Every structure is written in C-alpha cells, then in structure tokens.
Length: 296
Ligand SMILES: NC(=O)c1ccc[n+]([C@@H]2O[C@H](COP(=O)([O-])OP(=O)(O)OC[C@H]3O[C@@H](n4cnc5c(N)ncnc54)[C@H](O)[C@@H]3O)[C@@H](O)[C@H]2O)c1
Image (cartoon, rainbow, N blue to C red; front, top):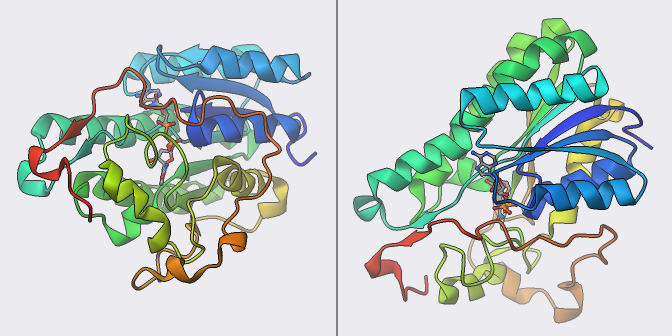
C-alpha cells in the first residue's frame, strides 16, 4: 500500500475523476477527507470507502469560500491529526461558446471554480504540509497547455493552475513540500459524454477520433497517476506537469480513427465507481445558440 496512513484531502471527490482518486487512494491505505459542493454525492463516496474498511470523512461546501476551504483543512487535522497530501481536483466546465459570445458570468464562475478554490485550499493546507513534508497535486488539463476553442476561459484557468503549481513547487521546496500537476485529456465523465455537458452532442461523438489512442480516458487511469505522484515513490518529482491525455497534445488530425476497434477498449475497471457522470447534475450549463448544433 503506497499511501498507508497518509492523510489526504481530495476536492471534487463526489463525482468523476475525484471519485476515482478517492477510491484509489483508499485502496492504497490513505485516510481521506473528501470535499465537494453540497449537492455532490460526497457522503456516498465516503460511505462506500468506509464500508470497504477504509477511513473517509466528508466536507460539503463551496471551496471558493474562504471559510469553507479553511474548514475543510481543519476537518483533516481534527479527524486525523495532520495532513500529508492535498489533491486540488475540484473544477467547473460550464459553458461552450466562442469568446465573443462567452458570458461574463460564466467566465467568472470558471475563474471562481477552477482558480479560487485551488488557491484557497493551497493557502490553508501549506502550513500543515510544511510540517509533514507533504505534497500537493493539482488537476490541470491539456487545455491549459494547448488552449481549447469554444471554452477559451476554461483552458486559460487551467494554464493559470499549471504556472501556479510550478511557482508553489519552487517556493515550498525548502520545506520539503513537493507540488505537481496532472493534465488530463478528454476523460469519460459528465463533461465529455451525455446531455448534461456543455459540449454539443455531435461534437462529443467526434472526441475519440482526435485522440491518438482512439478513445477517452477513464477516471481510473487518471487516479493511477495521482497515486504515484502522491506517494514516496515520486520523491524526486516536483514542479512537473504530467500529461495523461492519450497523446492528444502532440496529435495532428484525427489519427484516433486509425486505431483498430479491439485496441480501443479502456482497461477493465477495478474501482467501485458509481458517480462518474454526475458532476454536472443540478448545475447551470450554457451553450451559445450558435454552438448548439455545431459538430466541430
Ligand atoms: N473530464 C475531462 O475531460 C477533464 C479533462 C481535463 C481536466 N479535467 C479536470 O478534472 C477535474 C475533475 O473533473 P471531472 O471531469 O471529474 O468533472 P466532475 O464535474 O465530475 O468533477 C468536478 C467536481 O468538482 C466539484 N466542484 C466544483 N466546484 C466546486 C467548489 N467550488 N467547491 C467544491 N467542489 C466543487 C463539482 O461539484 C464536481 O463534483 C477538474 O478539475 C477538471 O478541470 C477534466
């Protein structure tokens, strides 16, 4: 067990990638504080982990609020005594519109959900991570490196996180704190599949072809990289961006179409995931009228 007795906070842990990180870390022996918005199935994930013999507490609240972020970190300390790892995974992807049509309110929700949450959690966790010589892992995105048409502020917010993570890594190395950032490509959550997501359905159908491996990733494949980076096996890794994107960053054209069908299967799931596609439930998602039936 690579994370035995490590105390870990996972934000955005009720659904999608965060749910997978929670289960993966629990299997690796971590003690967890799982955080999400009040409507997220965070308690259910915590209960599933406890039922399987693990340790997990739930924190429900908006982590873009200073008091909630502080309370989340304090829950880890009051429950387990210290903090070893912060996983800054919470995020939002709530609009699909070219920049001239992108609503200011959606821009502000994106900055708030992706940047303010991660900044506040980092700020409040660091004094504890300095004591434990722990580490932080952010969820960035290939969009933060490459940019993305029709959700330009989302890509920009992830670019901020990439640079922020590197800066914190440089600054905190003297305390023995490592900081890294995982940059997923298109992952099979509510964001890339299903009617609740911002990407028009026709465009969703074309995602797999743009990925050299010929398919979306699954949350478990992202969680595996987080588990390595959180563990002592990654003791010489800091200030790094880890692309986990099926090769989409260097890709040119729809080369995923060339992958034979039998090689397009995701690995057999080993984590008991129940909420992979529930991340956008109850959230307001905006698609500009001109983008509604777009198939690019
Ligand atoms: N799915 C993808 O294709 C993809 C690609 C690249 C990066 N990512 C990143 O992965 C992370 C997880 O995304 P996902 O696909 O699992 O989506 P998801 O919607 O299932 O997970 C995000 C979770 O964060 C929670 N959250 C959002 N704002 C919050 C706040 N202020 N306070 C507390 N919780 C909050 C949401 O409610 C949700 O449960 C995000 O940071 C996202 O940017 C996803």
